[in-house]
Image 1 (cartoon, rainbow, N blue to C red):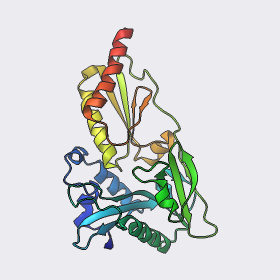
Image 2 (image 1 turned 180 degrees about the vertical axis):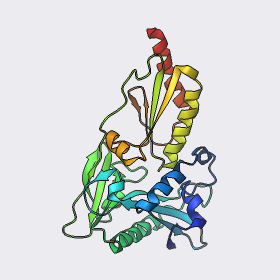
Image 3 (image 1 turned 30 degrees about the vertical axis):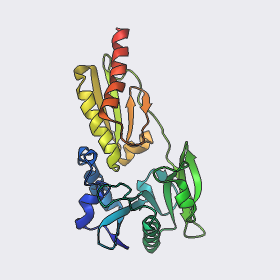
Image 4 (image 1 turned 90 degrees about the vertical axis):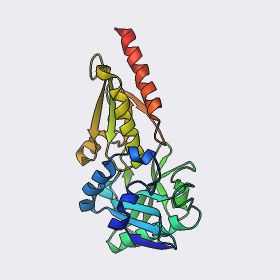
Amino acid sequence: MKIVDLSPEYESLYQVCLEDWSDDMREAGGHKARWVEAMKPNGLRVKIALDDDGKAVGFIEYLPMEYSIAEGGDGYFINCIWVHGHKQGVGDMRKRGYGSALLAAAEEDAKARGAKGMAAYGLAIPVWIPASFFRARGYRAVDKDGIARLMFKPFAPDAGAPKLIKPRKKPKAGQNPGRVTVTFLLDGYCPGRNIAYERTKRAVAEFGDQAALETVDVLDRQMYLQWGMRNELFIEDKHIGFGPPPSYEKIKRLIEKRVRRLKQRR
């Protein structure tokens, strides 16, 4: 096992979550690359886990708190920690210590850069990145929003704990009279959410002038702070929650349902 800084050799692989074998990832577009280029000057850090053959099997992505989904506090925020968990590609590499090694390397790097603490987003249930992973490594929950937990590990006695930025507004129904408005708050950091965006864009186009897509660029920090959300989908004022990217067919059905309702009101 070896932990290295992201280099050009691994950048394209990192931008598709190490899933270059995935047909779904080919739908993600160039949004991740745009996000990376915007965040590099703001202190984005990425470390890659390599197996004994030099193959990339995991990564951790972290950046200064002021560019994260939290506010206040001192230090860095872990956007994502990912170890390849599929049979395809390099195979399932979980339960081999890569996640722990990536986290330890990121913490040491953050300390060397003067950070007073490290925060991370985790879930209260055992899926994706569970909060329990961080709790077992010295983090504690300092804020929550539904099943989301903001985990924090201080490196210094005077480290201030951050708070999650929570939803501050949502789209209003009837923005475009006579058409169903579909709103996507896009920043591009997550390939899975980028897939959902591209599928949404295709689905909306199927309805011609009966539906309109409003893309809110929350990569712009001020725009993000206005909304308090990123990579979320709304059909009119209804929030469409999802974990894995919903299929194109599902998104189209949801839009079609609102289009039919609009026709019935005419």
